[in-house]
Image (spheres, rainbow, N blue to C red):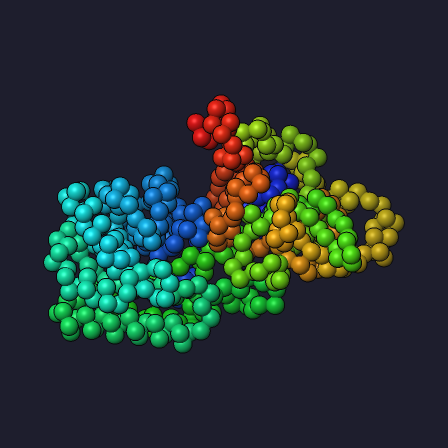
Amino acid sequence: MEAVLRRAAAEYETPAYVFDVDGFQERLREIREIVGEKIGLCYSIKANSWLTKAASEVWDHLEVCSPGELEICRAVGVPAEKILYSGVVKGLADTREAIRIGAGTLTAESLGQLALVEKAAAVEGKKVDVLLRLNAGSQFGMSREDLLMAVREREQYPHVNLVGIHFFAGTQQKKTARQEKDLAMLLEMMEEIQDQFDFRMRRLEYGPGFCVPLFEGEDFTDTLAPLKNLAPALQRAAEQVELTIEMGRFAATECGTYLTKIVDLKENAGTRYALIDGGINHVNYYGQIMGMKVPVVTNLGKVESRDPELTHSRTSDGENEREDENHHPNTTFISEHRNSSDGACRSENASSSGVIINEDRKDTAEEREEKQNTSITAEYCLCGSLCTTGDVITRQLPLESPEAGDVLALHNIGAYSVTEGIYLFLSRTLPRILLYSDKDGLREARGPVEIWKLNCAAGRQEKGSVLQ
């Protein structure tokens, strides 16, 4: 993927997200191989909605938590029966729409929601499968008492099939013993329902919240290990109920990279600062507080286009001015590269399309030797483009002789950053989205979007406005 990232930085402006679709699907298949065919798999599209279609091609179900996510599924052609329509707040209109299009299953977060689903199903003239979500100590789901009441009074919901329980205890769960305890509790509760009400709840939708490494110093040797550790317990549970495990962060994290460019370097009161053209409005690592942890970052060095027209330029409405007519998505841009003395990865050869990696490679041998002798590694406080002291990605990032114009690749950004950023702050342009696969090459799924129009009443009147 390093060559792909260099090509992305050469062809497109930063900041940008690059998602490795092949890598994502391969991880989904590896997860399937670990758990076996008997256990269902569900991808939570809130983790990264740009991977919705790719997930639907490999896994059984997609968790959809809003009317907008439902529209995404329809837009990319997800079969309705694969949809688990969830969400902490549902309305009558969107619930009816989910039922109308044939969503396979709905959840109920409360007795009030259960009544809402009943009403929506009645209006649509359908009977729908519903999972009752059990509370795990937060605002989500219903209490144990309310869940049992729903089962006891199930005859009040003639348009609902109560098929099972939905449970998600949290994210970044590190203790397998805790997950095994949750599974045992859920199976025991389902047995209790069987004994007390002579009613079998046959399905269990379980979100184990597996932990994934994100920062330097964490163990990246086998990021599937948490699943492997729990797999025996999951397989035992699958002998008793129809088990589906639900994942988002665990599935998508590794497939994403965020490209951003250093635009300024300075030192104040003994602290070195590297300022980038992105920031915390685009980057969201779970557990990162005020930049105290260090994500995995690669300095790609300067990545420039010799022919400016090869670069996809931004216009006022966020569209690309032009693409090179001779561009081929599968062109290999980097035939060979090596690590240079200043920490950047240099190309030995320019590509046939005129893209070169780091103009400094034109230096003479004497100049390169001089750089070797003067190269130093120092810690930099990596800050973004927002006018707030909170815009700190990391306070202590080791960089070897960085320069303005260097492109940084922030790894493990495939989950949530693209959907959780504080994008409206300061009316900064939304980053472009790039998808890569061997089949389709590197392609732009969304160009940069000028969101100032969302923060200004005048934007409503402009031709081509997103608000028109």
